[in-house]
Amino acid sequence: MRMVVTGAAGFLGSHLCDALLARGHQVLGIDNVITGSTANIAHLFGNPQFQFFQHDVTNYIFLEGAVDAVLHFASPASPVDYLQYPIQTLKVGSLGTHKALGLAKAKKARFLLASTSEVYGDPLVHPQTEDYWGNVNPVGYRGVYDEAKRFAEAMTMAYHRFHGLDTRIVRIFNTYGPRMRMNDGRALPNFFRQALLGQDITIFGEGRQTRSFCYVDDLIEGVCRLLDSDEHLPVNIGNPAEITILQLAQEIIELTGSASRIRSLPFPDNYRDDPKTRRPDITKARRVLGWEPRVDRREGLRRTLEYFRARLASEKP
Image 1: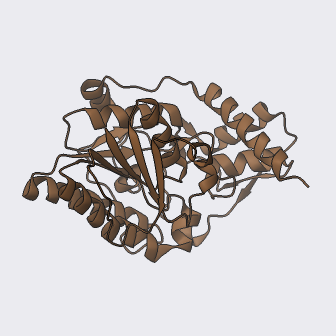
Image 2: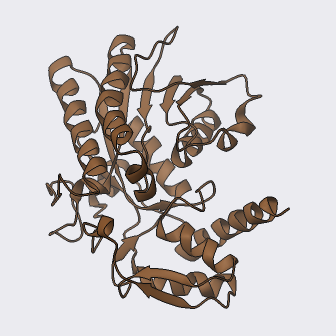
């Protein structure tokens, strides 16, 4: 099949391109690289089954030839990114989703939207099930990302119901692994960078916030299974193994053998809406897709550590 991946040069998008190519598909990758990097897909540039277009998907997308599926992964995805690019984040969730849906409609292709657990906001239901509508502050700092993704889901369902487009929606929970940026502002790469450099590991408050971390290979397998399924309504993909931020920091110190100490900082203003808990209910993914995560967190962290060590070594003069 001939697949289009928007956000192809990003962390998840690049792994998705790898997976689709490994399954024998042709892949057309699109990215404006404001938060992605062509280094993530450089290994694909000699592959005749892969093409890359540097393009902003908030503008009209023109591609020649047939397309069987459009997977819309383009978006800033970390607090640092969507605070630096708030307008672009809103535009890619709205205009970008509209243009990607338009491409799928014109090509009579299947469409898959990469949504997020952030549509649940700071949840009042735990763990989060797909039928929970969320607790989101539309005018807070995180609103540009949360509401962009909520709008994208609504637009996707409108195209499904009004135009009969064959659509999928995956709600992605915290994911980690090789190709994450060390400076992207998220807890896990921050902790690895600080530990490997021997710096204090900084947490906000007492670190009691919880997250559930899914290794990237597991996440991409879930996405591919959803694409191949007949499920049109949202599906959570993530690892239900919940851990506090403090526990994560302690695990990374132990894994790296670092002498770093943990230092608590007050919450900055732009973290006021930071979710206090985050854990997916993956009952639907198990039932509909036969999917659940396979990579244990310790093994996933070990693989990620190897990547970050290599990155730091390559950056030294």
